[in-house]
Amino acid sequence: MAGTYSRSTEVLVIGGGPGGYMAAIRAGQLGKKVLLVEKAELGGECLNRGCIPSKALIHASLLYHALRTEGAEIGVTAKDPAFDLSATMRWKEGVVAKERQGVSVLLKSAGVTVLPGRARFTGPRTADLTAPDGGHERIDFAQAVIATGALHINLPGFETDGTRVVNAWELLSLPSLPRSMMILGGGVSGCELGEFLARVGVEVTIVEMLDQLLPGVEPDLSREVSRALEALGVHAHVATKAVGLRREPDHLTMTVEGSGGRRELTAERLFVTVGKRPDSRDLGLEEAGVAYDAKSGFIPIDDQMRTSQPHVYAVGDVARPPMLAHKSYREGVVAAEALAGRPTRFDFQTMPSVIFTVPELASVGLSRAEAEARGHHVREARFPYAALGRAHASHATAGWVKVVGEESSGLLLGVHAVGEHVGDYIAEAALAIEMGAMVRDVASTIHPHPTFSEALAEAALLWLGEPMHVARRRADDRGR
Image (cartoon, rainbow, N blue to C red; front, top):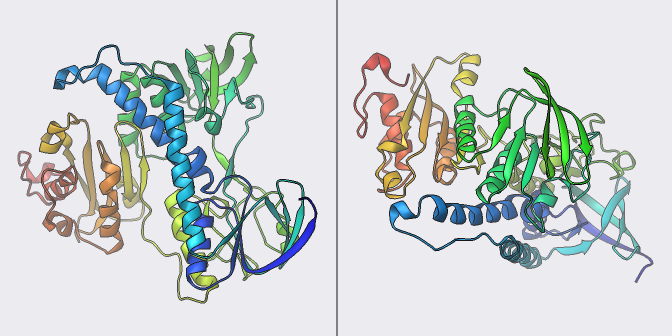
């Protein structure tokens, strides 16, 4: 019932995404009275409108595509395989609902009280909660964690309308497949979901303003995705700027400008994925005395996730890049332990990343160029999946693992991989770098056979000049 009420808590967590629910659970485990406010669904964008639902749709499209393209070669056939979008969407929603319920159970087990609504600071230790029914509550708190995530950027002239021009959230709930789709932005979402659409029969065109798909990703990895998209029939235009959009009755026309001048592209629908901004507006940060960057929207924090107000913490996408769920997880735990007085800080040597295209991409640590820019004398070596038994047995020989190491000391500096399951073993490389491992340490670690992770050990052996499953190269050609 609408009205005005008040309550108090030791810890107020604003936002129930990866960073927020992890902070709430850990604070509850440490004996704190915790109140979590979430304006939409528990799990945030990652669980409800990002990581989990997109991977569910990608998985379904891979099954369909495999039957149509490679099944016959390995003796698996089906008569007229079909892709039923509505059935796939129901399955996807079931996956999301199950995961969301899991988060709810974990919060309850930690003694966390969850309230739906929007919270806004009204002072350094007070907030106003607007409930879904319009009622209000005053919340008094001793400490707070801001975990409000990020919002999609709306590009002027290319504003989304939820039907013909959509963002990633809306694309993941399409009621029907268009015949054609333009994608404005060749980043992670553009490439992952562009592949999904192409595999299920949609004609896809990607427009990226920078000079490669997946800007910021090592060029070797980006080129592998470009080749895979081309094989799917996707038309990718890089170094191309979108300058206008006309919304015709039965199609959309986008004007783009590149090295060849201006041209027009048409499709039934447009997916706009040009980045995100921190969701830090309308939080009452000024009233709370919390400093933030008015231009970027990020909230400055220290290594314990404290803001300019020592009793207020910020975690996840709202605090700083990179906008990764696994970074948010760790930040939430650090914030909870810090506010509980535990000795803790957010300290890491490297942050792994995975892109769920096909082939899959995974990176951790420095690239050769980055290492050399820091003054390291480096060597790199690349082991091909084509020399890996498991890859042949799984019909997945496209891929490789590259090791970057310091020439003089043999220190492992980075690992970059493309191919089946690289995201599942990149954490091994992350642990090795965190522990200050040498390339020889990785090479000497026994890897189970037959697995894709053997490629990491083999790449390390190749770096050392001691290859076992590829022909030995000349010493001066090693890793080149």
